[in-house]
Length: 68
Image (cartoon, rainbow, N blue to C red; front, side, top):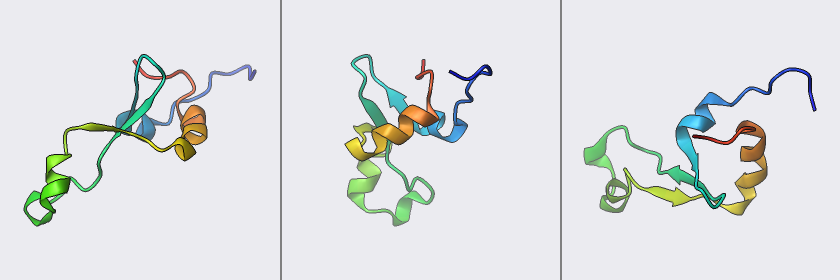
């Protein structure tokens, strides 16, 4: 364990959330210009979707203390 506190990656803290059961959730990207996006992408803008299992090891490093 390092003597200093580990820093949370701020970009990851804004994009990902951790549920009470330990799942990592993310929002869809591409929120810039809404009228040129596909209808399916526009529909998923505000929703949280589960991330892939491949990203969990990277997120554990980026978010060492979890999220509130």
